[in-house]
Image 1 (cartoon, rainbow, N blue to C red):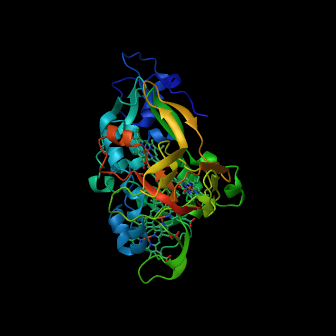
Image 2 (spheres, helix red, strand yellow):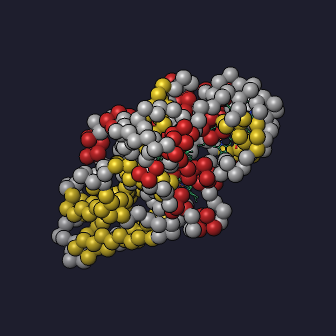
Image 3 (spheres, rainbow, N blue to C red):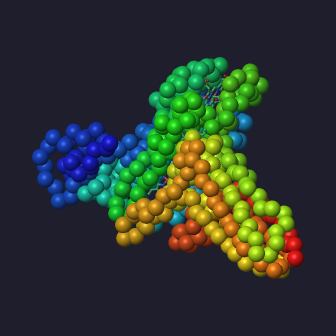
Length: 404
Ligand code: HEC
Ligand code: HEC
Ligand code: HEC
Ligand code: HEC
Ligand code: HEC
C-alpha cells in the first residue's frame, strides 16, 4: 500500500530545505555520512501553514466561536479539542519526541514549532528540522481545531458555499466527508520496532452494513441538527460538533457524551432455586450500532465483562471476567498477541453457571466496563490516578432466593 521509505534515501544531512527541495535532490548523486529520508506518507507532514481567510481576524477556534458560538462550545467538549494536551499524549510524546505524532494531534504546520523536512537514516526520532516562523502557540493548544477541517488556502470549506460574505467560503462536500476522518483514523505503520500506529476504523467501516446503508463516520459521530449556525442566523441543516465516541472522559470532572455500540441482552436467572441446582445466566452482547469494530481505533481500548456471585455477607464466592479487545506486547518489539474485538453485527454469548449451595440468599452482579487503557500502562506513563481509565456501561444485580 505504501512505498518503502528506504528506497528514497538519498539527500543529505545539510539539506535543510522544503519538502520539494528534498525530493529534487534525489537526482543528485551526493553521498553523505547520514541519509535524510524525505517524507513520503501523508501523516509524515502537517497541513502546510495556512493564511487567515480574508474577513477573519485569526485562525483560532475561539475567534470562529465569536459567531459560531454553539458549534464552538460543542467542539470544546470534544477530545479533538484536547488531543495535544491529553495527559497520555504528553507523556508519550515528551518521552520519545517523535515529531510525526504532531501531524494528527496538532495537524496544521502553524501549530508546530518546527518544519520537518525528513528523517536522518529514516529514524523518526531524528527529524531534520528548522524553526517555523508562522508558529502560533495559542493555536497549538487548540489541537484538532476548526481550521484543521475548514481552512485551506484562504478559504473556509463548507457544505453550501454560503457565508453571508462574512468570510470567503467554498463548497466542497467531498472534502468534508468520511475521507477527512479516515485520513487520521486509519493508519497502520511500524515507525520503529517498539512504535506502531494502528488505527483501522476506516477499513473496519468499509464493506459492512453501515457503509452499505450510506451511514458514514459523520452520520454517527456528527448527528444532524436543524438550527442557526450563527447568532441570529437562519435555521439550516447543521451537525453536532462534540464528536462523541467512547464516552470515557479525559478529566475526572469532565462531562462527556459517548455513543454506545453494544446491544446487551440478558437471560436472567430464576428467582428461586433449591440447593444443588445449577444456576445459568447468559449475557449476549452484539455490536449492533457501531459502523466498525467495538472497540475500534486505539489498540489499548478494551471492554471487561464481570460476573460476581456474592453471599448474604457480601463475600464474593465466584467471579469470572471476560475481556474484549486487543492484547499487545510492546517490548522488545511491538506485536499484536491477540484480538477479539466485536466485528459489526457480531454477537457473543457469555454464560455464567453456579451450583447453588445451602445458603439463604445470593446476589449475582453483572458489570460491563469500557476501558481506555490498563492500569499498568497508566502507571508506566506516570498518569495513574490523574486520568480516568474506564466507565461502566452496564450494571445489574439479581437477588437469588434459595428454598430449603
Ligand atoms: C487531524 C486528524 C483527525 C481528523 C481529520 C479527525 N480526527 Fe477524530 N480524532 C483524532 C485524534 C488524534 C483523536 C484522539 C484525541 C484524544 O483522545 O486525545 C480523535 C478522536 C476522535 C473521537 C473520539 C474517540 C474517543 O476516544 O472517544 C471521535 C468520535 C472522532 N475522533 C471522530 C472523528 C470524525 C467523525 C472525523 C471526521 C469528521 C474525525 N474524527 C476527523 C484525529 C482526527
Ligand atoms: C464574523 C462572524 C463569523 C466568523 C468570525 C466566522 N464565521 Fe463562519 N460563517 C458566518 C456566517 C454569517 C455564515 C453563514 C451562516 C448561515 O449559513 O446561516 C458562516 C458560515 C460558515 C460555514 C458554512 C459554510 C457553508 O458552506 O455552508 C462554515 C464551515 C464556517 N462558517 C466556518 C467558520 C470557521 C472555521 C471560522 C473561523 C476560522 C468562521 N467560520 C468564522 C460568520 C462567521
Ligand atoms: C453506524 C454508526 C457509526 C459509524 C458509521 C461510525 N461509527 Fe464510530 N462509533 C460508533 C459507536 C456507536 C461507537 C461507540 C462504541 C462503543 O464504545 O460502544 C463508536 C466509537 C468510535 C470511536 C471511539 C473508539 C472506541 O472504540 O471507543 C472512534 C474513534 C470512532 N468511532 C471513529 C469512527 C470513524 C473514523 C468512522 C468512519 C470510518 C466511524 N467511527 C463510523 C458508531 C459509528
Ligand atoms: C474534525 C473535523 C472538524 C472540526 C475540527 C470542525 N468541523 Fe465543522 N464541520 C465538519 C464537517 C465534516 C462538517 C460538514 C458535515 C456535513 O454536513 O456533512 C462541518 C460543518 C460545519 C459547519 C456548517 C454547519 C453545520 O453544522 O454542518 C460549520 C458552521 C462548522 N462546521 C463550523 C465549525 C467550527 C466553528 C469549528 C470549530 C469550533 C469546527 N467546525 C470544527 C468537520 C469539522
Ligand atoms: C495518523 C494519525 C496519528 C498519528 C501520526 C498519531 N496519532 Fe495518536 N491518535 C490518533 C487517533 C485517530 C486517535 C484516536 C483513536 C481512537 O480513539 O480510536 C489517537 C489517540 C491517541 C491517544 C489517546 C488515547 C486514548 O486512550 O484516548 C494518545 C495518547 C496518542 N494518540 C498518542 C500518540 C503518539 C504518542 C503519537 C506519536 C508516536 C501519535 N499518537 C501519533 C491519530 C494519530
